[in-house]
Image 1 (spheres, rainbow, N blue to C red):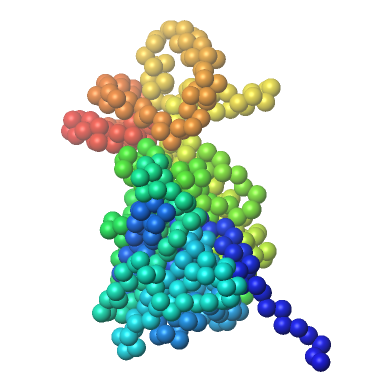
Image 2: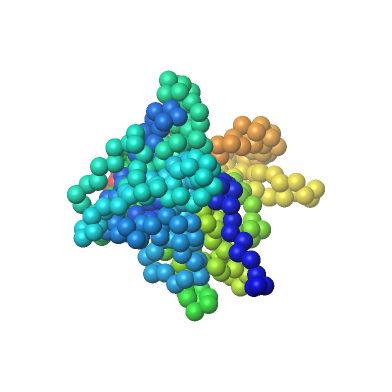
Length: 490
């Protein structure tokens, strides 16, 4: 007798356990899209078809398809070891994604595939059949109630039916359940727009639709916006590979149109989307996370976003999970990523506090704010009017012998700033602060003239005075008005 036993798992027990990996519906569908992209697909159609408990989800692609033997192998749980080397453009890893992603949402998984040379093949997992027989019965036909006529071209069709976890036991007439299904469809589309945004642009891009609607790439770094700042890009050597890290500070809300702001905040909003964005072979794994490096998602650092690119060969070092939705920073990289995060957060805080006007430092003139923050002797944070602000200087110069009265008025204003009321009122919407004079820009011209006249009296030339005015709050928000005033002086 041998000194070992074959401990084969119970089919019904294990396959039910595979349903508990924690996939969200959108992450599960993204896992199917991974397979399509790895198969060389250039067109991917995702459809979520509502019919109550009989609703179905399909993912169809025009990739190179699979032979019958390859399909059989792909349908086996654990068909490939995660230790095996994979090509750089293979988005898989564990040999589980197709099955676990599908089982997490549905009790029936059908795959129909066609190659140019071998015709078509079908395989189906029906968890009810597995439960009744207790055997790993992989069926060779599709569901009798679904039309699975193969296309003439190569490609693969994945179908979820019996969607018990995705939909539940509901009637097609259940309007609330239908609304939830529509909301889910929107989440799926939004998730795909972020996860595969790099595949949706450029040469050889993938075309993707959800229920016929095009999937539009969501660039988390707003790289096309002129006010986005790419701080730096570094390559960190690690285990014989290079990890590319690129830090960005996004434009302040005041620099964005309503459409740009709505697009830029992502699925979770500006505050929650700050942090690192991990890319594995160009596929976004993690978005908006400080990776346990000890940083909080503070309001004033919400414009900081950092791209980290690593190859699939480093999956184990990053501890990428089966769902491809979480990872952990390798110990040797912690200090470097913390350093980069600190730099990005510091820069983002400057942009946030100065309402996007940090770019004024590119001129020869220092930026001038209207209010200054300081700490008093009791350690309390307080605010005072900047006495060096040219508007205030011009005001004091124009008062003659009444500077004391003006100073008293300024002190009264400073001591009665309703900081608590302001904090409570805008705690949840700091990125939506109104622009000074935004509702009445015409009132700026006489104010510019007031400051301009005082600066010229102090010996500045007209151009020097207007250069200085251009970096003064709030005039810096209205360069076109400053330019119009400049032209009026010629």
